[in-house]
Amino acid sequence: MLKVISYNVKGLNAPVKRHSLAAEVQRLKADVVCLQETHFKRLAHPLLRIRNFNTQYHATGPTRAKGVSILIRSNVVFQLHRKISDPRGQYLIPICSLNHKIYTLVNVYSPNTEQLSFIFGVLRRVSLVATGSLLVCGDFNYSIDPLKDIRSPKILIPTKQIFCSIDSPPPFPFHLRC
Image: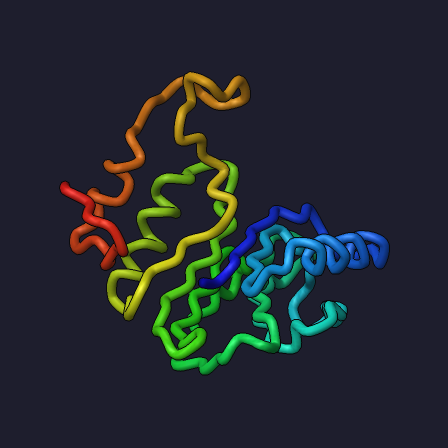
């Protein structure tokens, strides 16, 4: 069983934030770490020195905004089959083997506006390439239950509708009846 954690880190350019993240990841004994809002600039990001996490993938934009990363623990048997990376740094989709099982990992950092159309677009793209078990992580900037979220507009769109609205839903590890 893999232990996966996902964090919106709200920027990792400060060494103290990278150190705190490393301590938390080690404490939780995570195997896969999905990070959103890393704020790394393309080709100028610092190396995330987290012990036993030598496999790292990053999607960065042209500025120090957005950004997603996926880190894989060294003791996980890993093989990358394909990687799709958003040039704006808002999603990263590696199709890979983790401990000899095929996964499509999706790490998303959704914009603050037009979240649903963004999510639909990413899921459409995923549906074209998804292989094995699908694991979706991220910060969707969208509330599953807007009635309980005081910061959210009170527009209720059921989560099921999000996944059923694309032409060909991706293969979910559970049954989703649309």
